[in-house]
Image (cartoon, helix red, strand yellow):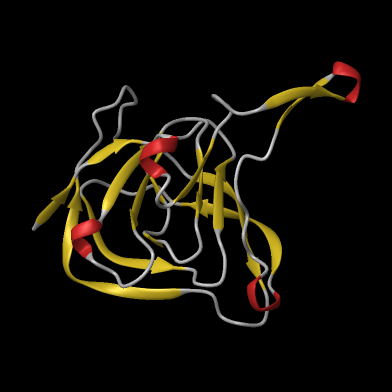
Length: 170
């Protein structure tokens, strides 16, 4: 079985797949008479193709047990999909470039606490991979009449290796 090692989630490393949504390094400024700090334009939400519209959801991810096998991937060909954790949680992100799926280009990232992701239109990704506990995520997605999810089963599963990061993964 192929092993997929996780790397830290950074804007530069994730750029081919979309946006990292985080406050660190983001453009920000005070609003509302100085009572609020606005962190501005954190992701390129792209959902209007073929009459789509933005929708806001909450996804509740059940914790995964180790070892984790990556046996399927999905993509949203008509719009981006953003995930922002609603709490102090870390999670794994597994992606492959948009276009024809090639398992040789799989990458895995450890999303640290306070980081969200916005998958660009057509980027292959694994469904949510939460670990420590039940975890809620705000998801900004595409709504519309046309289906917007393609799923594939991998010819052979990959095993996700635990990240070497300061958060203890059960």
